[in-house]
Amino acid sequence: MRGPSAALLPLALLALPSTLPAQAPVDSLLARLEGHWHMTGQVRGAPVTYTLDASRTLAGRWVELHMLDIQRPPQYEARVFIGADTIPGRVLVHWLDSFGAAYSVPHGEGTVTGDTLRFTIPYRDGPFRDTFAWNRADGSWHFLLESGNGSGRWRTFAEYDVRPAHDVPTR
Image (cartoon, rainbow, N blue to C red):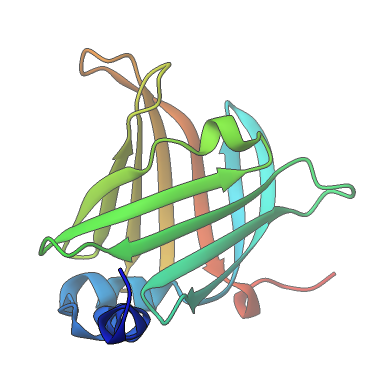
């Protein structure tokens, strides 16, 4: 493509994100994830503690979760991107972590129902279902990560209590 229309294409692409409809229920729940958090729980039955920093990124269309193990050196680190899809009520999730690029595909899809975000990532070796539930009473979150066998049976892979970092006593 040549000429004036080719020069306008980048401007049109820049305008596109602002024309996408906002999803109030999804964005409202994702906004509650923003902040600095302390995660305690277990992965495959072993106790873990992480810091979690969550903030808007990429023109505010995504909430990026940065999970980091408090051990030095850290044994685990993840960046999780959660955003509202153009399909009302649906969210898309990209989970990237220290296990490497091969485990970052495919993306996950899910929904928001009330105070709960649930998404499934259809990994080649079996699906993962993640449920993030916000507790209105104390402002905490409960994260449940389950692995599936492909025939509807789920087992707990990891589970976390997620609290605002300012609620955690310092040592």
